[in-house]
Image 1: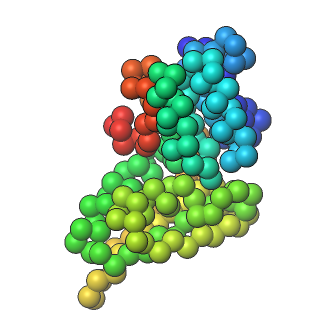
Image 2: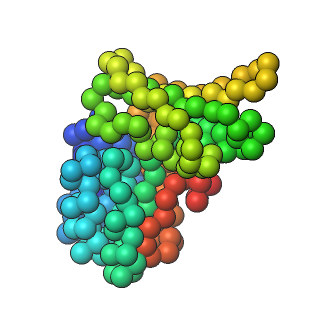
Length: 201
């Protein structure tokens, strides 16, 4: 597939670019693309998505810190699918699933998310998505320190016991399988916005 990769020089893009080529995809400019992948910044992602929609190019977006719902109508109107996920690591998706199950039996919980010190948004998109899946009213604590990549734990407390569900990303290579999975299916998605890898797993 011919792909335009926005954020190619960034932390995720620099790992993703060679992986896409190794998987048989070709990195091209927007005018020649069959899909757009965006891992940029909250300030630039909306313009990138709108440019892709204008060219009728399906979008795969991993940039957080913006409101993807803001382009749902535009994508629907032009008949183009836009896929957004706050986290493309398969283990992170499982962590969110397990947290949503656990909260039914252990309703007292808090989320601690830990990321590298240059991450632009806090709390993270993954933490917000996890809280939403757990019912929305879950305290989130954000840590930003050098040496971290992306980590999250959901801590449940009950009488005489605690339960911790934790996911650790030690390398941004963890995002590659999720991106490749979405690219396989993005052309089959309905027009408009699809959120989360759970929709495809």
